[in-house]
Length: 227
Length: 359
Image (cartoon, rainbow over all chains, first blue to last red; front, side, top):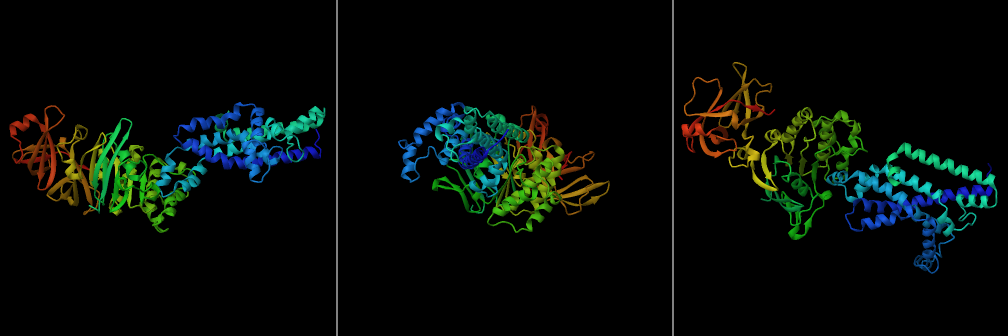
């Protein structure tokens, strides 16, 4: 098993991508999960289903629609162009956005479960102790939902590291920009560089196993709820 | 009256309907008492703003917390109240001390920091401050929850069956602390309970609720002595008398003074001058037309019958009497009532067979 410079750069890019996606999902997924756990709105079912779509759709389908939407003629692409950001496909930023959408359920579902497990009572208690809803969210709900945050972050990170289809559709295979480990393994195999494929694939296998082992040891319930 | 607590709530939740119109004194402990499903907790939650009654009104000492007619609804976190929930509700991620500081830090009119030690002493939890909630017993947790509520400097303390989830031993452990609160707190307390024992020990004012409605509301002694209460309350009929221990007398007895007479009970450990509440059940009181001379009963008091009412117990009636101004209830058979011609205005001797001391 060997890793050359290109391999290491792909590993670094993958870690950057997964880190960025995890941070983005913490910011976006938390309010969605909170809303889903608290709302009595009729839209809850529909929103929950949309969030869960990436669990069942082939990555190529998601990638395809995102490619169209983010392209120069798509609504999202026109928006980013109007904002002077250019179009996102085949850029690192585009990859982050697409991966975040693809990993959304892996952040939202553990968080939603954690928020639902807390129940109304601790927040009512906080209100009777003068905490505003915003204060109670940070001082009570977030600390009590910590296992959900840990699971959501680890699962989102790991899922992004392991993704292939969406990356290929949105990002292509540009070194240092969009060529992540999973794509590079595909390249190695195509070029019959089995030794290098072994190096990266073995590292991915070990990484995934360690992540899941950590999760199942720390917080077995959160994982079961996702799958 | 502006100095009091006013509450009007009309609220529907599925089959349940709450329709409450209450005025409570701004001092002492008012107990909301009733069978489960009578709306006690809903009423308390409405007072706290945790439930919003569509055309509700709530004010305390002139400060309006809810007046839907003028569009006023102060959210719970802006109301200077303390709330003790039925089950332990401590934040599991905070130590006992941090739990207690939670409201104290946020209240604008919060008690000064040294107050924490005073309250901890009052509730006997000083030694627990560094512990985690999950290492406490149920009784300890409830005491911490009470301390936490008090430290937020509430103008009103709401307690929802704080003892209901505890076993008898834990209840006995907490009740003395609640009685101390009763003596030392200047703020009004509204206390939900379905245990007659707690009512007798703690209440100054009693509100009886049934199926979402107020069936009676008034000072404890007067309300308990009513003969027109629904069967749910009449089963365990009896009065409560506030007495002062005047001292020990011969034969290992102690003498208790109340406004209109004296009672003798087995020797009490308290110091003379202590205030003691006595509960006298209607079933433990009998009546005689002449003062019995040869009787084993120690407490025999002259009384005037003020009312006679039917009870659910077959063949029995409930007799309301007054010893001076103090009401007393007796449950006697209809036959005795007929033969002794017990009717309002009649002077009788009340023989009290049992006096339960609530301390």
